[in-house]
Image (cartoon, rainbow, N blue to C red; front, side, top):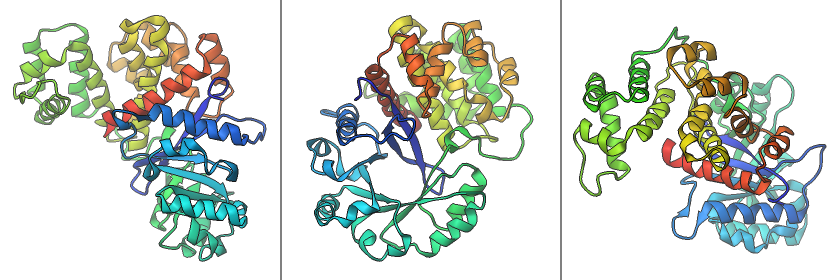
Length: 402
């Protein structure tokens, strides 16, 4: 299946806006139901690419929610996944079968999570409470808060509630206040409303100046001089370079040494990430993580054809494509504050030029979009390669945003 179809991901948020995990599924259109074999192949493919033989689970503390059917509860692929990071989603009616119920309880005893959808929430004290670790509650219509209040009244301590779809931050706040545990929606593409900010804050201004200096290959002492004006930024750089192990066991305490050890291209990438997190307007952790994944995925998709030398520009395209939302500024205004290569600007404004199609494909991978297939085909990238790169980008982002 990974050779013909594409993986779609949706983040799950906790009440503090943190990404606790992802729902991964095959892209399907027209109400098609994936077969048992397709669902099983997804678990096998995911296990192969995010559970490394040497490094273990590559998604750090993230949990994966994967659709399941009774026929695959004993699949060998499940044994390749860490049970404490795996949640299988079943229909409540599946639990009516005694054999399925026994298999579910066996998986629960082994540490695998079970999420139940389409269930009678009045039955939370019965079969669901004994078998499930999560129950999915669906919202419909406008008054999400009232529906959440009803669900919250039925809540049991042993079963966590996952609300969906939660599409606005106002609905998110209402559900979080009522005690729901996790949320699925399109919030990863939505800025968190904050105090309106006109222009860049002081930290962002310094970061932009440094990015400009790196682009212009300014001397290290000059870059060091600007860094020293912001103690917090200096501290972050030294912490980053020592955590990342650049000093080969020796602690690096000098900014000049840190810049030399890091090099200009990695420094520029680090500043790109910092620019996004320095926002006080549209910033939310999930939007930031989405930008990092998109940046890395754009880079991986384009490197095969364009070469590694274009990696930094591809990464900047992906990261900066959400910068307008992260900074709370129109994209044209963002681009007026920093000089970027013409091809990067073109990609950001029109999705055209050398980098634009790779950025468009990375964006399409975040949605259940028909565009994924046509964009991948136009770039001669197979579904299998797109899926591998998608999971690689997801794993890479965990180390950057942790």
